Image (cartoon, rainbow, N blue to C red; front, side, top):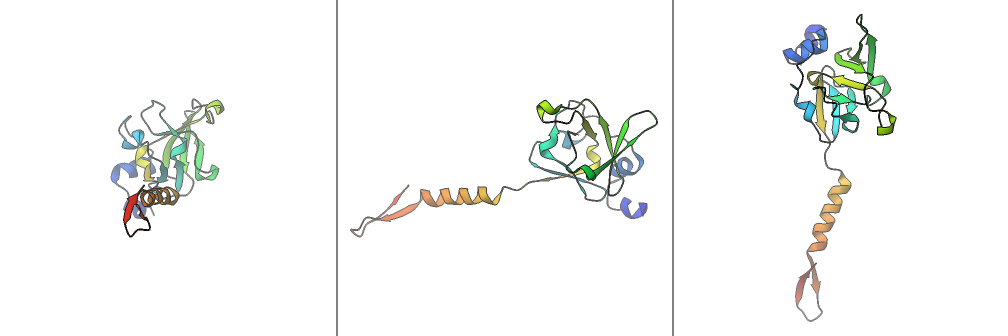
Length: 157
């Protein structure tokens, strides 16, 4: 099973997901990711976090206020007292949860999910169909041809 999973993730991600090795601070491009989208487990593809819950904690790792669903992650208390977070589906190591996150006044939970970028895959959301329809409608409305009744046609906005 380990060899099977190891075959589809890069060696550094495997070290993080399976061995709990923490990536260096500020090394993940996902730390600066600001687009709308979702973050999935690199080990199994489970949905873990949404961009709406991501924030800049200044810690050097992608940080989230909460998981996408309560059952998406599991936590385990380590011997040193820290709270480790894992993917509930494949048990891959994601990072740690700390009690210094945004409180409910700011829409948070008071917790900071400090996640290794190597454990995640980001998928940006596409523009919504409603937005595309509005844009197409505006383009059509801007180039309407009007028949003035005397055989002449003119373009109007």
